[in-house]
Length: 468
Ligand code: BG6
Image (cartoon, rainbow, N blue to C red; front, side, top):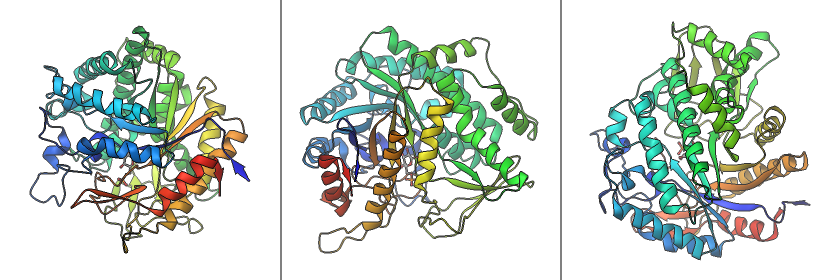
């Protein structure tokens, strides 16, 4: 029988833009997704999303009822500072005060993210994370949040998934500004985001608020598809680019020699360099020293093959199995491992990849004392039949990943909790409302919530701590 520790957090996650809706209420400014999802060809937008803005009391009550004792929420920068850098909007502060209080009253601890993909539009137009001025605006926003909510919020996350942001914005090109195949921009933006994270950590610790702060990375293990040296090399290159570069920056506080060597080799293929300011090594070092935990978001692992050609990517945003292409110049090609099942969006389902990643973090980054799995879940086209949603594949997915976490705990990794992505169905950035992840089904016409079979299963697991 597999039993998770008594104090293990059984959480569920949301993010402001994907859940809140109410985009024109109470003085909120626009983030870049507002503009992008209102272009003529867009088939969905985030105007109403899951209406969490009005339903957070109902949703936190559901958490309580279903044994969920941690909730990830994010604070929309544009509700607190509508243009990102100017005046503070008191109504935004009031809203999050109420939401945080509702969580606490329901006995659900809020884990609060400051940046979950939603840079304010003006700062986005100004270069987003490529412009170091925006880092300063982010730190100001972070400080305002610490000042206003830090008496009650004791778990802070600076930034959610730098790699997903930069890969979407500059490599895959399915996130605005829709730039494709520009690896150097992606690397530079990741470095700047890690610096922004470190600065926010330093500021938080100066305030003595007696809480914890960390960063979330998407960490997908990379395996060679064969023993061929070029495949082994491709796995190493993608791992360095997508995982190790930022783990080094945020947990070690410096890029190790081997990481930097590989990154520079990749950049050389694009005739580019990485720009590190004189004061930044010191900031990264201090940030890492003060960082309290790492959040690991894990959905899939990848299998790599050596690749010498130009970049070619096709993003499967429709759920038509077998359509993805992912080949990056100077890095490698992701290929299908015939032994591993995938979701309809071509994401390999591989819980061992999570186990391997957790154990690796413990071994390679021993200073990182505490981990949470801050997102994991299965995108699925749920069927709503007579008020019931029998999402058996999702239960199976979550069960296997929880078992992998338990094994990692047994192997000595300090994993303190798990957050299902997502609490209720939310907007999927590039797939709209068809790719559902929630424990609770949302009828997006009426905004009514229905517990899926997975919600009942999760409740039983959370209450017994037994994975079965
Ligand atoms: C994570 C993000 O990368 O993946 C979430 O933090 C996101 O915001 C989730 O929704 C699932 O991605 P997608 O594209 O399937 O919705």
